Length: 356
Image (cartoon, rainbow, N blue to C red; front, top):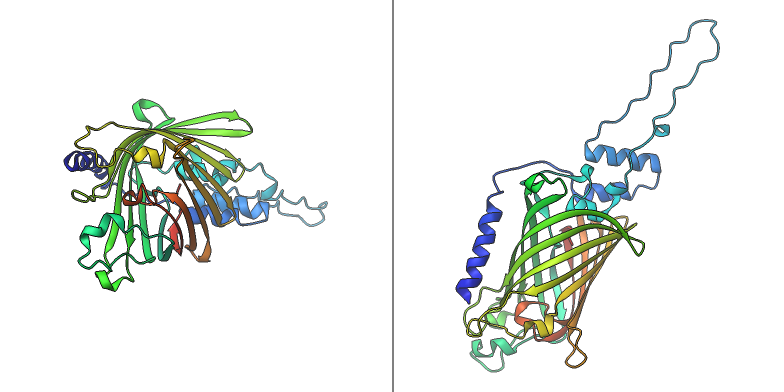
């Protein structure tokens, strides 16, 4: 099982690394959000033009008045000229997945994928000691309720316009999430769990209306997730998924059903993982100025032995591009080692980039 999991992770990472030599300079998410917080329409549109690199229209020069001539005619202000539609630039989905031509950044550029954050303070009401009982030398040792959490996540567009289709892009993503018992000196402050998640994503740009929402994209993906541990603590699974992205004004909905790729019984570390993590997730994202709120929901949709999870995130401006980050979790599967363990947790920290 470990060999197969690492092999799939290796394949995806090799494909991902193929895009590393390229480089480009692009406007950051914070730049776009800074524009969205400007209340004056004229100034906000000018900000979008500046960030996107679009040339600013110049006002026509005033004609030179001659002595004794009639009244001078004032040039029309720039703001009166027809401005390009900025709705795509205002869209969080468009910025994140480059769904409009103005939002495209080209290939081989590191972009945020899922949220990137550091929570130095995170409290759990029920630390999961069960998997680690054999690791503790003394029976009174265990995990602390207070720990730290770190997540780094990025994606790279490996090909723009796959097979000549302008609405089809290929991306590779990688996410690593670590849970650190940083305040637990009795067990040498270890990283109790780290989850690795490489994936390949094929993005189709769409444009249709459904129940008042605009369908913007469909992602077809393959994802491997594991914790890289040995026998007894190893957790992993492989999935294929389809993700559908919708938006209306500042509200975005992302629905992602998945299918777990089957494994043989003797190689499956967690055969019942779908009973706890379900068969998909729903994410709701709302942005107001530079504040972002998100809700993630999972459920196995079983009447008996119903299991699910809820995660709430809030990011808000602190200083420059630095943002505050607050996270609340309730349910099963906050990490792979906890897939069948229920807990509530609350964390505070900082974030540099947002994701979905």
